[in-house]
Image 1: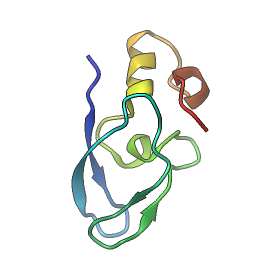
Image 2: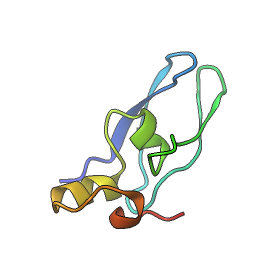
Image 3: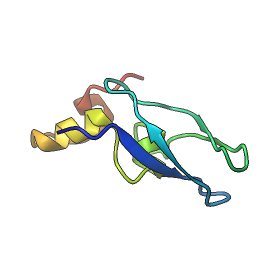
Amino acid sequence: MTQLTSTLTCPDCGHRAVETMPGDACQFFYECKGCGTLLRPKAEDCCVFCSYGDVPCPPVQEARAEGRPAACGDAGCRD
């Protein structure tokens, strides 16, 4: 079962926030509610949840559950 919430942790200030993830796409930007930093995915990740969350985005979760590579293109994420 796909989990739709993830706790994002800001790498700048350490603020943590539980957020609902889009079920069928990746989220590329997130503004930290603690310090206002605009988070972007790390180079190897498809979205901010994969980079800064405790749970990866739903497309990556589904790819892993099906035994497929969890890369953005393989998971069905949109650019």
